[in-house]
Image (cartoon, rainbow, N blue to C red; front, top):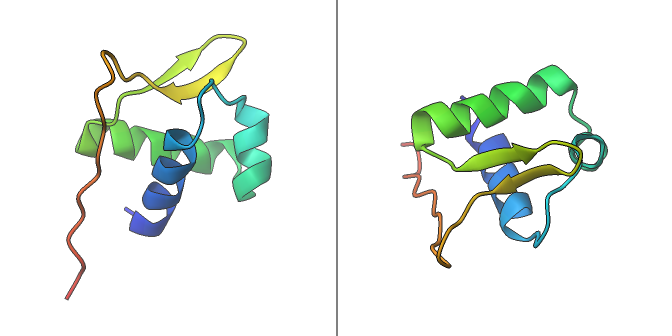
Length: 77
C-alpha cells in the first residue's frame, strides 16, 4: 500500500465540490486506470473511505450530513 498515493488522492477528492471524471483524475496524477482502481480499492477496503462513482459524472467522497472523512496515518519508523 503506497501511502503517498493514498494521501494525494484523499486531498484531491476532499478539495472537490463535485464528482471528478475518471479521465481528469488520471490526467492530474498521471495514473493508469489500474493504478487508480488499486488505490481506490485500498482506500475503501482498508481505510473505509466513502469513495463513490456517480455514473457519467465521476468519483467523489460520499459525505452525508456535512460529516468529515479523515485519514489518520502514523508515520513509519
